[in-house]
Image (cartoon, rainbow, N blue to C red; front, side, top):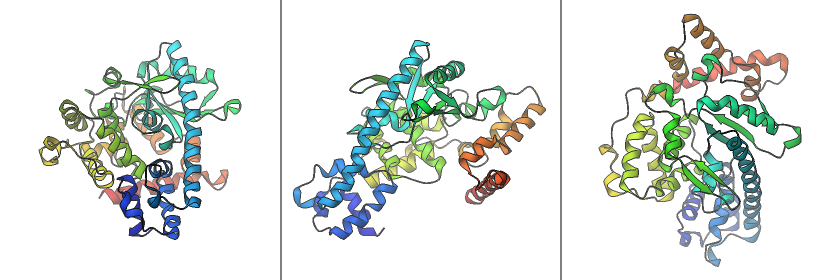
Length: 370
């Protein structure tokens, strides 16, 4: 992907259509490789609908972009139905739930729900309601891959994964969270309760659900990107759209303080700057100088780098050293199903090599952090 094509993407994302008048068919064709890998193809198709005729791509290019948009539209209809089904089942059981990430943002901040791709449904419930939520999902036909909300392991992990059964294969997989980024382990003054207090209602054409307040959603998005050690343009667009939802000084003041509490101060700064570069967002003058923001907490780097899980083993409230040793063993040797999913072996008899691959990946992250 050459610099010209990146400039073309800049132009579409910033609504600078004048730069696109001299783009050739071959350049447009090459241009499509990056939007696909960054999951912004549906968004760009929505953008070209607002361009002057002379700035639009050739018909064959527009057709490929339209196909991605139609896929996104179908996906959003499926997700809307699934969110309604799951949240209704939870509410009948008295379970409060927030919809997270792409499934919430596509309706909450995007210009069209079809423009924000995602691959699963992330939900947040209060810790004391996790087991009831698991039962509710199982009654709907979902299977829990590994029950992590038990004993001391609930302090190491933050979610359980559910896959749809044979009779509901058209549904998305579900990640059921009881914590976000394990920040409750870093600072007990922050918990899920206040996230529910600040939650906002999101309306779709056929249902209503609750999601994180834009301030909390922005911090969570920044930490999520930082954790993955790679950046996708659609994730940066999440940050840009959420920042545009902070319309009063009180929201920006809350963002400044909460991102420190979440141990995500540096991540928020880094990705707000990228949102400024890529999408042209303007921060309010009073908050544009990051040197005037509160400083990151000393433990921020530890909270999100490769040693984070080992740190959490040390901090868990367990009854003795043997429980911590057992938890450490589980951290080093997780359930085989977890390894098969994240480090799939060529054959079942080679599963041990997948564990080694996982450890080598850890050591690779050690070198990056050093």
